[in-house]
View 1: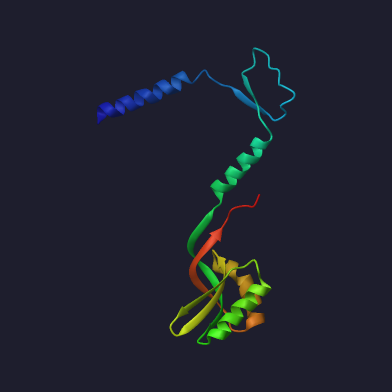
View 2: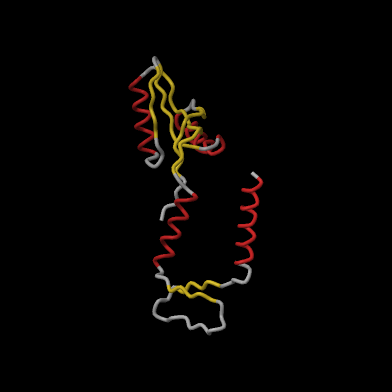
Amino acid sequence: MMKRLSYILMTVVLVLVAGAGVNAQIVVEENIDQPVVQGQGDNKIAIHADPRLAILVERHKNQQTGGIRHMRGYRVQIYYGIDRNVAFSRKADFMRRYPNIKAYMTYTQPQYRVKVGDFATREDAGDLYREMISIYGACMIVPDYVTINTLKDD
């Protein structure tokens, strides 16, 4: 164990000593037509890059920081009852009014439930809940397994 630790320590020291005298500044120039002229004494590296490369890098950052996550969250329940026709009509009415918000209908004998939205927190669901109360009457915020899309659109 001590022998392995000493090898690791020696390797770290060698890497630090070898890299102590090295420093360089990287300059990325997006204008391909006009090259950057550097003197011999400058410690700079000039990279002539296509401007489209910056767009690809930004997309990659968005994919790394965002994503589609399946997690415990909240939905607004706009119908709970035994009448199948009312459940279908309530879901259809909601989808007409809010085409960008997903609606879900489940059946657990003998009850139909219509839930809408995908929210990470109860507070996020609050705005939609207040709108649904004014339209449909009795509604409630319920915990559910939701799909959250945090990818930024390009």
